[in-house]
Length: 182
Image 1 (cartoon, one colour):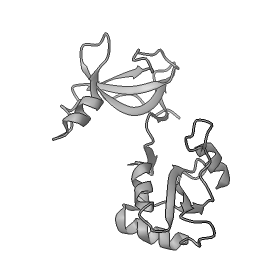
Image 2 (cartoon, helix red, strand yellow):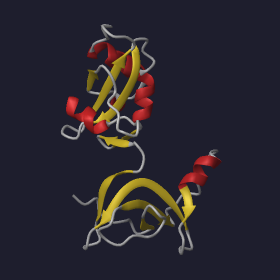
Image 3 (tube, helix red, strand yellow):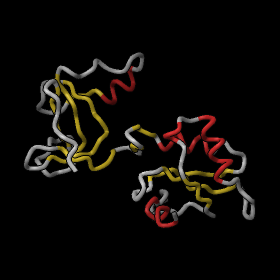
């Protein structure tokens, strides 16, 4: 499903991993430029430097959106994913790390990973507890904890307690394996 074309005041580039502008039908990060571009983030020079940048061979400044897109032959953009872990839930951007941080504040939670269920579009939290045989909190207690500290769109719909986080051969959490546990 295409996400459309830019507004008149915006210019878009799709930039590949090596900083090169990519051709139609190749995936890259969406860069936004033009008269619609802000000057930067208010009182946050570091964030401004990291997100507002230049592209080789281009005269203007660009904003790195973090969205991975591709352009089809008709010129429409298609959203493919994110370069970071940020996800959209009902149109609101959510940083899973923020949700995971709040979950880890519970005294019985050892670790937590939050992801989106591709089938439902809802957030799912995978939680490990502090010790073997520990009875963990139920969904209702988790929801109360989350609702007291986060906006509604950031509260997972499901909490799945697992024995250990599955890891890839490189030692990172294997989110594909987690999704199969849900």
